[in-house]
Image 1 (cartoon, one colour):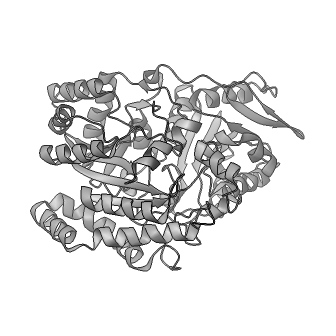
Image 2 (tube, helix red, strand yellow; image 1 turned 180 degrees about the vertical axis):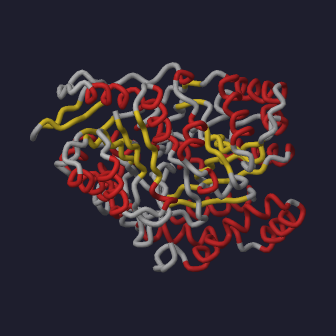
Length: 489
């Protein structure tokens, strides 16, 4: 059966698969990794599959429509996100016009959280996958291939039957991740890896995972609460390294891997074993990964030996009470010790800070900015709280009456940048966004920091390339802020 897996066009270089979908100030553009896994699973099941990432291609909705008209697929799998959902549904509707018998199925964290709302929002949408979607897509494709219109038995599917919407039994999480195809091979077949850029990784990079799920219970984090779950499942260490070796051989100019696990360092023993085995196998390619600030010195040393250049870490707040309220399970002194140890080992750190959570005040905002300056990580980003359906943070904001809007398009500014729809009488959403703009300026424009970066780019040409590529876009946002309209996308 013919299937198109589509990351549809939206606003400029919009990234659906990042944890807070938007156009980023640094020019980051994510791989459609989850969609690529879905495409790979369908190919593995014997279907004729095409993976299209319309974003870096610069395709318009009209381009997609013409392609569907010409290729005549039986099934169209459409990636979604919260801020782009109305546009995503419209893309499906347009494709239905040119091929009325096509089945449109929508995937991603947003539709997983609100399947019925999604299907009732556009009556041309046929189905939604809830949670991890590889096995559900394969089963749905088989039903369509067999001309079976009764989808009630497909676990993890919500679908429309005339005017009725049915939500089927949940599908259990995939236990054996090694049965899934190698996503790097899917990239190789369909994507140009030089189209993708992550500001904290050396360019060009390739995004992969070593496991799925996160055991921690942070109230804002969308992937564990809507897609991958809070029970961690790992790939076999040698299977992980086989894929890293594949990248070395098949992406000759790739400078680095970005490991997009929710927390690669969650199991410190496994993390060290992975690094030891990588050294044994003489796999040279380095990597950047997501981490928590609770990694001990010995594990950091093994990470460095295994080629880790930088860790992306959510410090979130400089106030312990707010960390406790968000269920971060992290102490401020742990973060201080972690950064000190990371600097000892030579691993750089990208610090992430999130403002606007329960208990936030103007005083705690300043505590967070002071903490970020104290830690003085290689880079830092400051986000206003963006609550997504399916998360505890969204339910908290809704229950408290803090949601300024339930129009999902408002999750972005007019330019497609991150916005905040959580508004309290004592701390408005605009204040949170403007604080993040100021925090970025104060962090990056310190003489101490600028001298540090100048020394870094002089001594390390690879870091210079990454820094200047990010700076080209980031600089104008640093000076102008989030709400100033810009013509360049």
